[in-house]
Length: 138
Ligand code: MN
Image (tube, rainbow, N blue to C red; front, side, top):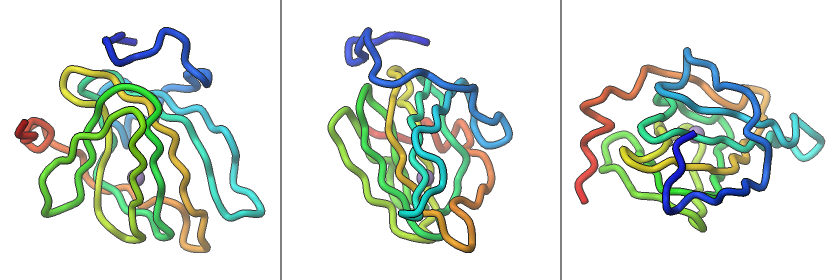
């Protein structure tokens, strides 16, 4: 994994398994921390290499991201990309189309707390194009 000035050399959680390439562009890893449980949540630690991101998607019950390392992007459909970084907490309402990942030049690690509902936890959509990914304006 590419290390940056904002990346710790001593991650809290193991890197886990390579993320499903059907739903991720670039190199990303997922470590399941708590599988679907009596609190109706699924908790995972996700690590994105610089430039890596997930597809556009929605969560039927919403999601909370806790950024623990690095610098990345979060975008809701129809809105500009937001820069996210270590210490940020992002609340994603149910059924809002969005994506998240690393920034162009920095890796990102976040904890994802996703509501598990009878309609599932995530609905994957199309890939985030390079044009979309590179649309961040500093
Ligand atoms: Mn999400």
